[in-house]
Amino acid sequence: MSHLDRVDEATFAAWNRLAVRLREDLDAAGFASLDHDSATGVNVEVDPGNDPGGGVFVSWVVGPALLEQIRQPVLSGDLQSPAIRHHRVINEAMEQALRVILLSAGHRVEPANDEYRPLTLRVITDHEQL
Image (cartoon, rainbow, N blue to C red; front, side, top):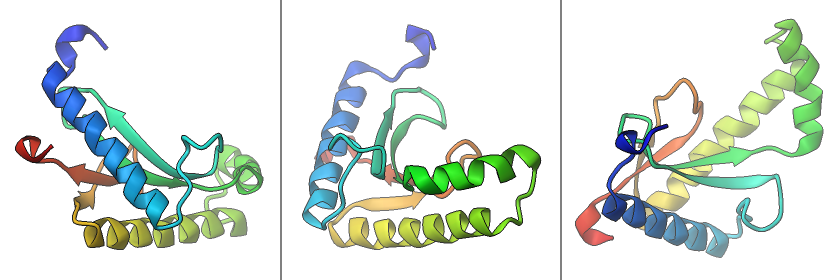
């Protein structure tokens, strides 16, 4: 991504401040974020793109054992396998839980509606409030 494709520094800084607040709010609710030396838990992502894919996003990352269980069915195209169904149920449940918790904490969220970020929430920002 070239420099021209990024949001301005003030917006990027505001998004990063929001990401810190999100991690704090989710930590207070008992969720470990990926910043805590784990590959499992809440992923808070800041995408600096100056396009519809840019912004602040929150998603759930399942544990490595389940990721390994779904690897072969995904590669073989078996999207109806029990492991993939289980993965989908977990992610749908966690997306809903994260939405409710973030709304309760005062954040505005919406589905990311991004094919590259399924079951991911976009946190809507108001730069003046950051």
